[in-house]
Length: 113
Image 1 (cartoon, helix red, strand yellow):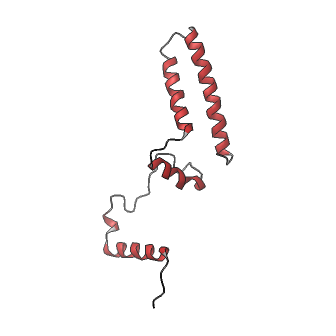
Image 2 (cartoon, rainbow, N blue to C red):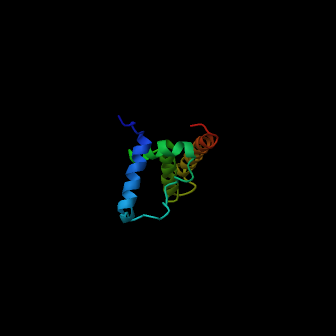
Image 3 (cartoon, rainbow, N blue to C red):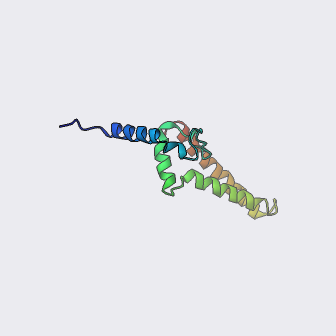
C-alpha cells in the first residue's frame, strides 16, 4: 500500500502540475506582485488571515464604522453655522468619538483587540 500523502504534499503536486501545464501563466496577474490597497500589508501578520476572512464575509470592524461616523459628522459640521448650539454639540460628539477611536486603535497597536 502506498504511503498516504499529506495535504501539503497534495497541494504542492497540484501546483507543480499546473505550472508545468502552463495553466498558472494564463492568470492575469501571473508574475506580478500582489497590490494590496486595503491595508493588508499594514495589518499585523497574526491578524491578516482572520481579518481577510471577516472582510470577505462582509464584516466591517467597529473602528471602521466609527471612522465613517466621524467623517459624516465632520461633513455635517462644515455645513452649519460654527457658532450654533448644534455645531457645539456636534463638535463635542466628534471629540468624544475621536477619542474612542484613538483608544481602540492604540489598544490594537499594542497587541490587544
